[in-house]
Length: 230
Image (cartoon, rainbow, N blue to C red):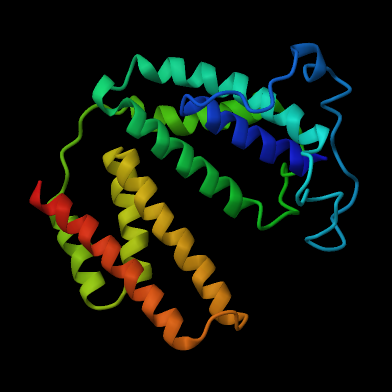
């Protein structure tokens, strides 16, 4: 189904982007066909566990493998393009950061499963959205960091304003075109989002929530201080 296609596409794209082997290699005729790409479903799932929506365990569905192989092909092409623009010493680290960012952004977008386009299987559209994201960072040239902003982020963290610090970090590293910094801040935001959800639903006690939240604050503060020292 459409969700499995897009999940497979994202994972295949990221595997190729980071230079990993094709885990579900299929002959092209097995996935490059109009029939395999007719993957729309006409209703939302009755529940998150609905197999029409999300595969859980066991053999991966054919829709997933179809998306995976499309994604792997496109991710390999994107890796080759990026190789010409990123210094060799930074290349693998940047590819991991791109893959991490893309996975987090995709997962968070699809929490709202009724969004327009979520169920549409369109490899070219998927490819172009990822290409635009990567090009935004690799074609920007060298920009100088503004340490005044870093000091502001550090000040927010010292006052326990982690959400504002994360938001400012994301905009700062995106403006700076630092994919490593953007991915780090995005990861902290993602972890905080799920931590708050666990707390809201009673899956974690208050003391545990506060301790894990403090760990996230400290990790971001350490990262920002390292940038201030550079």
